[in-house]
Image: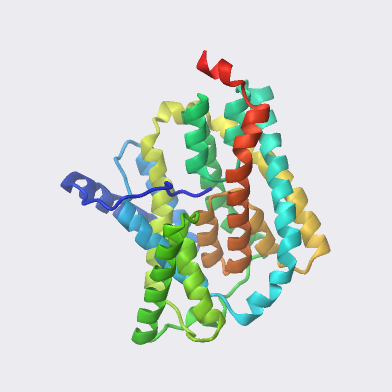
Amino acid sequence: MSLIPASMAFAIPTRAKTLNVLETLVIGTAGGALFLVANLPGGLISGAMIAVCIAAIAGRPLVVTPILTQTVLVLLGISLGSLVSRQLLQHMGAYPLTIGLLALATFCSTFGSSLYLQRVHGWDRTSAFLAGSPGALSQITMLAIERGADVSAIAVVQTMRVIILTAALPMLLALTGIAPSSPPAAATAIASPLELAELIAASVAVALLLRLIKFPASWMFGAMIGSSVLHGTGAIEGGLPPWVRAIALVGIGALIGSRFARMRPKTLLSHVNAAVGSFAIAVAISAVFVAVIALTTHVRFADIIVAFAPGAMDAMLALALTLHIDPIFVGAHHLSRFVFVTIATPGIIHLFGRPQEDVDD
């Protein structure tokens, strides 16, 4: 699920919106710093997300502007690409099998979650299927409006899934000792000023190219591809300074948390049980496929968990960065799921959702 709308236009924010953005960043930075000082796993992104989420639910008009979002995504993509090495690229042979299983896992978890929402919470089929679909939120929202589904309920379920995963996954991996304890050497080195200029130029150029062809999550993936090529070929060894990576992580966390600024507390509370229950079903089904892959391949367990986690692409790749997970493996799988959901969901809704005449009535 991408957190970013399919089309984003550059616009000069008003004074009020500028103050809202500054408030969002201050709250996110404070939350991230608090979690970091407490030495909590994934502290920057989780702390920023939870702090902004709480403030947004409390009624603060928090927002992250499109241009700031795009900047954060480019920085995140560059940072992810700096983790790439020749060794990581050699592991790509296992991808066809795991991506195929991911497609099957997505299909099963969508049906399992939707069945739960229908049987336990009395949702109509269309709303249940759209809420259970783990990804492509912009496309899901447009399809929900077109089919007359419950948009607010779907938004709560989808957003709660991302919030829970982003907050809980780092803690789970750390407590179980699954996550790698230290980053690759390439990720700790800082590129020279000239290399940084080359890195940024290449990353932005690829991002703009992907945007022209309407590639999903073009800012993040374009920057990641540009950075990956330079680092994978050995043209550049270092990456962005740590404080820049920290800004990207806080920015992603603030972006996720700010989504609750558009939700009324009453609407949120009325769908919390549905969100938690459907999330549990989706995770349980995904866990079966994770176990199969862990037992039959040599892929690291932590990489499989983050790649199969039914959360937003942006958030899961940010976690890959902060938890030192293989960004190529995670990125390939979340992009594949995004494409699969985008292509398959309209057909699933047509076959299994409410008949169109019921919606029109």
